[in-house]
Structure formats: structure tokens, C-alpha cells
Image (cartoon, rainbow, N blue to C red; front, side, top):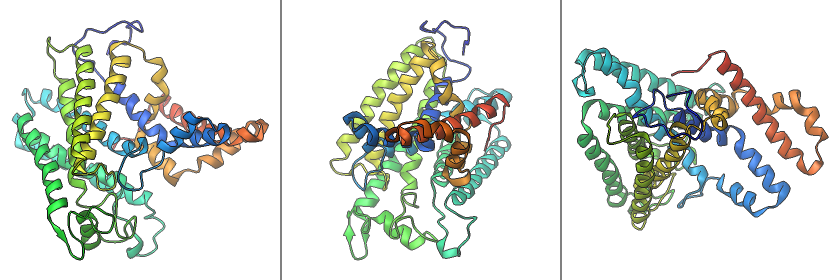
Length: 391
């Protein structure tokens, strides 16, 4: 990436050294979880404006079928994790003098497998910590499934496919995973309910969780990060890997601006396919349905194309800096904001005096903004100190 390019000037390079847009998009995604949603909810209550009320509604999960923006945050993060894989593997390829990941020596691949497995185990453990593992209240009250655990598992199995199959093989796997999950969910009967009952109680995914998943489930009869729905989540990670391979490849026929435009139209195509599929297999984040994979994957591609074209191609970067520092420490801020750090208490201590000066109607907005400022301050300190949590 040419850091000296003038903002607004189109970069005609084939490929940047690092995708700043990817860090920024990751940070944009994490911003809403760490505290951004609180600001929007407070603004909706304080102003009553239709725009903020609509945005506030979009920052809640859908009860079952359907989708909101909030439902897309988790799969977008997994999609981004998939994009990063071809870039991280490029060094391995270059070190061993081969031009294809499939040509890496078996010994090298086993080393990669071990590293990937280690990362997955750490993410599963950290996910359980977020779920309250350290407040141990008996084995039966441990929730083993988690957001971080699903990211680890889906990324791991998608990585195995990437390391052992060419692009054609990867696409076949993608189709098998999504079509196979659809077939299983609609054709395999669940005792007491029958086949194709896509409810929280009657779905095959929920039944398998009740049968095989130890500890407690998120919703007693169902877990949104359960066993069977991890299969299509691998498809989400694969969509990221496809995208990473496309962006990473150098070709005079595909300059950066053309790649960005292509991502946008590929996103539209995936959204259309997802909407078409939902007529027989509803878009459902809790079941991570195949139509959900395509629909959210499409929006992920469109978001990436916008960030890519604006930041890496046109050179407008300064506005994205807050998102970049979030994205570079995304796992750390996720862990911190999910209960490991009381940012509300810290914000009250540091900025509580200013919050009290606000009109009573706006104090909740100022308080939520103070939390964000505290988090950004911490992340900026870590960024300047070159301290990043890498797993």
C-alpha cells in the first residue's frame, strides 16, 4: 500500500502490501458490539427521530426468521477472518519457493495444521470464558458453544479445505456444505416433530444440540452456536477465503479498482441467490441457514468493496483510523467489552463530570459516548505501544 498517495487519487497498483480496508472493516464490525449500539439506542430514546429509531431496531437480533444488521456482525467477522488466510499463507508459499499452497511440503503443512488447531483451541477456551467459565457453577451450567468457538472451528475447517484443494475443489466443498445442510435440515425427521420443522424446538439443529452438546444451551432447547449449524458457518469462512484469493492474486487484467467493482457486483449476486433460496429455506441467523450464508456473504462483499475502493484504491484513509485501531485489536476489545473490563465504571471515573454537565435528556447519549471514548483511548495507547493480541 502506497502511504504517500494523495487522497482521492486512484491507485493503479495491482495489489497493496496490506489491506488497510480489511482492518478498518473489522473495526467497523467490532465497533457496534463494543459500544456503538449503546450510542444509537440512547440517541433513539433522546431524539425520537425515525432514523435513530430504525437504526436502534436494526441493532437487535431477529427473534427467529428474518434478519437485521445486528445479525450480520458475527458472520461478517468470520468472513473477514477467511479473507486474511490467503494473505497469511502467502509468506509460507514464498519461503518454500513454490507458487501454490498445494505444493507445500507435508512437513510444512503439518506445522500449519498444528498452529491452526492451537488457535482454535484457544478461541474455544476464550469463548467459554466469555460465557462465564471462570465463575464455575457446576459442569451442567457451563455453556461450551460460543461466538469465538464458532469462529475458531469454522475458520479451522475452512482452512483445511483451502490447504488441500484447488479453487474448483473449494467451490465444490462450499456447495456440498450448503446443499448438504439444507437437505439434512429439511429431510431428516426429528423425533416428535418430523422432518423440515424449522422451529427452535423442532429443528434438527436444536435436536442435535440437545442430544450431543454438553453443559447448558443458550436457549435451553437450542444454541445459536451449536454443532450442526457450524457446518454452514464453514461456508461463510470459505466465502472469505474465495475473496482473499481474488484480492491477493496479481494480474494486469485486474487492477485494484476493477477488483473493488467486481466485489460489489458479486455481493449483489449473492444477495439475490440468498433471497431466492429463502423461499424454501428461510434466512435465519440462529440456524445459520444456507440462504443466510449467501445473503450475509453478499452484504459482506458489498461492505468490503466500499471500504476497499474508498481506502485502498481512492486513498481516503484518515477517517478510518479509529476503525483501524479497533480492527487491529479486535479480539482483545471483544473480550474486554464482554465483561472482562467494566468500561462503564472507568468512563464514569474519567468522564463522569462532563456527563453530568449534559442536559438530563442527553446524559445517556453522553454516557454511552464516554464509554466509546474510553475504549478508543485504550486501543490508541495499545496501538502506539505496538501491543496487539494475536491468537
